[in-house]
Image 1 (tube, rainbow, N blue to C red):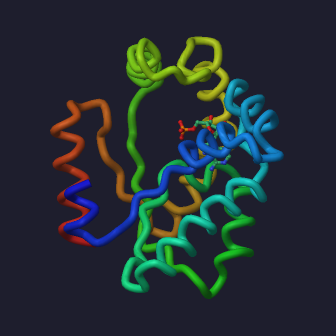
Image 2 (image 1 turned 90 degrees about the vertical axis):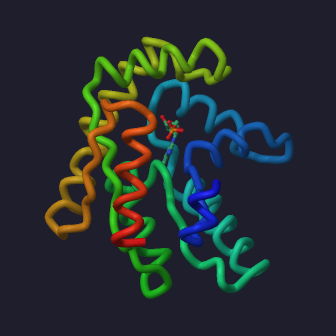
Length: 176
Ligand code: AMP
């Protein structure tokens, strides 16, 4: 939070917005979102984009200077990327992409540990294995595309929380 104030951006997590929407009793998408999340699949882009765009528009409407966003967990696949390009063309510049590089075993162990208290329906071994498949099939190719554009900042995320945080701060000091 402190960092977001220093660098003047608003952190938005696609997964968190989807989890919040799922809890909203007035939402028509609750059940669908839960099904996708549990299966580790990518929720249809119209839903994710509309949630992101609503948050961005509301943030800027409240304070026009708040026009920098760190969007976490997006774009996750080709469909996300196309939806983003279509909706945000001429409206948003993508400065860079943070890639938290970490091997599968460590990721699974960390999420299982998180699962002890997160209450998340996808922090279990079965969902995690599916999420890794989704990542390899759908998300990695998108990171590769941004890599070709020279926009990827890679961080060794197998290190400790403090070390990873320091690497992120260094990137923002240079680029933010
Ligand atoms: P995360 O909170 O980033 O770990 O995401 C948890 C789950 O939410 C994913 O496995 C997907 O089912 C869903 N999700 C997160 N981000 C997206 C996205 N950009 N597009 C579609 N579904 C997403």
